[in-house]
Length: 307
Image 1 (tube, rainbow, N blue to C red):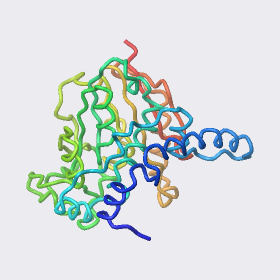
Image 2: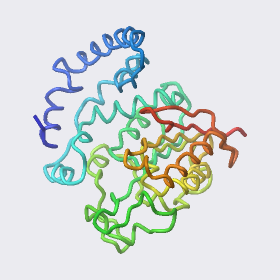
Image 3: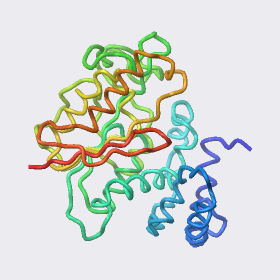
Image 4: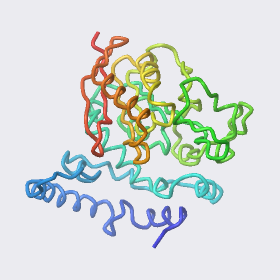
């Protein structure tokens, strides 16, 4: 059965965490999964990518029950989300788990109750789950978003533009949220962000510099978004902006390359050049301390300030 946005929200209210036993049932499933995953891994000739819950189970660190409460949304808000946001992103606990498992793996310093509090900027926050998690651990978290614009209607595609070459504020977006005269009327995830009282700043991430002073944040995060900002040949310009803003660390995770781009020689050459440059990154006092595989491609990079 294909649930509507409204039905998914109602179902989450009825069955928090997706389990008929509620949060306690989810914890039971994780406990079972933790043992099964290690046992099954030893039997597999080709190890599979662990699922979100398998990662959480391995860390034995589930999100608190409070995160299983659904978004509180008006009928008007749900109607807006139905027009512009994928159905899966209106289920809060799933959003939380997706962000939780990434932070557990790559930013453990942000995921401890007794850890130092940090100022964090997350680029392209979307549903805001990462911001919720950071706030839970006491960090000051600011997000970024922009009216969704890929240019299907106007023929302008942000994935292939040069950085700073096309001002999105001067063009109407796919969902008619940015009218093209510099005014942003709305953005797709606004109802979710406002329902949780999160701080999200609206600006085009493909244009640098961003509206913050140097070293404004301890950490800058960017998950599954860089490829929408500009062409890979200019991705290092965006990373340079991340390191301008960060005092301690930058975590960047890109989406895997889409299948239809694998045969685009020019695109892939710049993509591979970016991978190599990130592994060897040395700029603004930052160096790459981790490069890893996610979803079977090299897409995870963690930079740290070495000064």
